[in-house]
Image 1 (cartoon, rainbow, N blue to C red):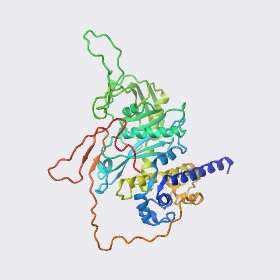
Image 2 (cartoon, one colour):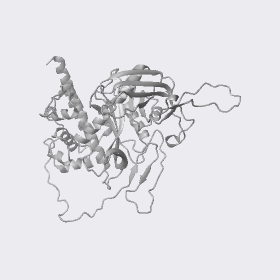
Image 3 (cartoon, rainbow, N blue to C red):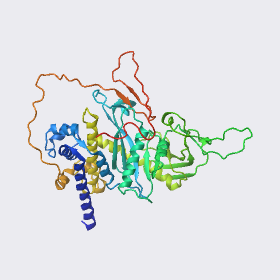
Image 4 (cartoon, rainbow, N blue to C red):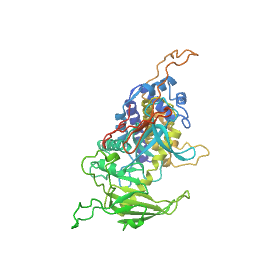
Length: 502
């Protein structure tokens, strides 16, 4: 083993120990129970099936009552934990740029009528594989992406979307706070490449780019294939008939190639899975805004948000499906061929966030607990994020403890689940700052055979829209009555659910 490799291991071990100490400092109430719950989540064998099974792990020295008591009555300094996540070493692109991705993942609770703050979450693939709206707790996640083929991301923030929240407004506030924390932590300095934010088609990329125009960020978002953009304002020409000069240029219809015109940049790249990938870019295109939905309360004339439209077409798909083109909108203008390749390759890396969601739900058991309180769900969410952050820091220290039927992998290519298999050996070296449990006697509880006379309150289910309009309806309404519909005035900068509750 070389001296350089020993230095890398020593630095990684110091980072893990430092983060564990900082995590314990973020647990301000019932911290011992919460910290040992996080350790049990990291060290238990196999996927997490139920929450109470974590109390049987050797790392959890307390009873199952302390486990639920920590989630229901504990407190987490979320602001301090967010700063700790932002100060960790972050992955960067080849040019040293930080690439962030934002997406919403639901914690589905369709049968939990006694849980408050549930909203209708957009889901696909359940049952017959149709688009469905299922009640649950939607969470907006922001993570930093790595380069190359990997399933690792660096999760930086999580916000629970409350019913009636404007997704674009909440995401804008969330991204602003994340970028400001990165700047304060020294992750971005003047002169560095601007932070690239990658969004999917469910976000209004031009609106978010306009709201974050004062930050060193670039927005890259996917657009629907039926969109229509406008060209720059044509030069003023004297018209003897008079009238107001035009504000928008000609139309750029995604579905009509005759309106595209000449591209500003074209690139062709040979890929291993998709064959030839052709990217075409058209400069200075903008959407035509109207005073409705999110722009209904905008003061002054509506802005013209120009950007670059990129059309990505591949030769084939690995699954053999129909290779439909992908349309992207980049907030920058004057794109070169290098910018075009960087944009569409960064967008493909956005799907690494889906691997993180799958790990959270299938391995770490993020959505397995049947918690009634949304505040307890927030605490459990932050514990899962803290556990995943420790796995990412322990990557250089982990060894491949694979099962006999699994293929061997080099140390630098271990997946998060492989790193978790050996975290119990690492934990014995780092130690635990949690105090020893105190002996106690369980309470008498409810007498056997008695019924619960405290009926739990039933809560309505709301809906989260991208337009800023709130819609809610009761979970059980009488026959002949209509669901109630309320409209809330959410501005571009603030909205309900802008910060996660502790």
